[in-house]
Length: 557
Image (cartoon, rainbow, N blue to C red):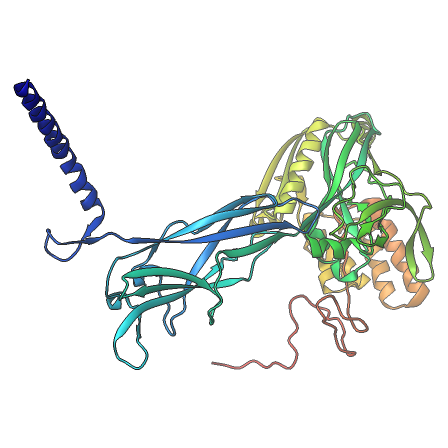
């Protein structure tokens, strides 16, 4: 019995030894994992980095009609040292990701984790040495940074301007390290660093209907139509309105299409655009064979502000729904208008009743059969045509459209585009190597003088001698005689002679203008423009292109 007990005791001792031996490597590894190498000796170790945490709370708020989208914000830890600034690594400090992601209105927390080497002397890491009062004995080491949000300009966001002092504080006597979050410059401490970001994007939708009709014998193809805002109640927003809205609809064939005028942007800018209303019309893009609607709609805000509540007082489009009462919201009413003419020019008079949507009608008038019959009446038989253009992008696009239209009528069109010198050199050969030329030309930049404009194209020059070869005709001779006579007259007599010139050109169409250029002139003599600029009383236009430098002389270097 005694021998059996002894055997059991020996087995228990052996089992304990085995367990202890089995634990030794694990304990050794755990101890080594808690250390990092230091110095040149491989058998010298110090304890691993200290981990210090700071809790950040991000408050996301909404201050517009649009909910905040998912977003990622980044923070900065800025050196407070005087003079040259250094990154955290210069002070031996590491940090994990300084980014925080949010999704909608919410409060989101994130822990920023800093790694600090375990030392007793932080002088090599450029920390500040703090001595005990009245002595030269260093009792503490510290290093302070500023924690703040990085403003990377994401649209619609207002960024927090809060900043916090982060002070790493090492106590030599107690061998302890603290990370203190406090107000910069004083000892008001915080448990968390809180940042508030407000999303201020506002969006409104105004519905419209586009009706496409077929007016000729050819079905309408694919076309894109656009609306534009004009005559904004807050005049300073006129130039900026185009950045705050989109309003296009693409059609394909006859039918009815729904579209939306979407106003979206920073809440303050959208409010400035809406608060006193604006007008909407269709852009006339000048697409071939299309008519454009001249309807004008007045968009007006309808609201009464009572204890933070918005009370709508007219019928409104169903997409315009009231929002939270903490935001100044507008219900937008759509009014048809009637074009009126008064002593001060054109204006628009509103209908008494608001409607649910804007409507626009466009008719595609192209009649291929009519075009073919006109060619037949003129004795023209479709055949091969060489169409030349300069390399101006707008002109090349016109050439492509003309090629397609002519080929639809039975012509075979070769399109040749080249730089202006090469193009004119080719057509000035006065041979049969080309049939049609499309090229830009705008003498109106030199002024609006009728004689200048007529002589530029129809005078005794290369256009009439070789390019059009019209200078030998009786019509050209009569035209130039009338032009010369007009120079010697004035008033109504001169205008009558100019009108006779215009009639000759309209009947012969030697040169066909594809685009009419509007020459704008303006000054802000009485009222400044939106940027506060106005010109002096002695302002006058100049009859030349380019820049007219006043009070400047040329010198040689």
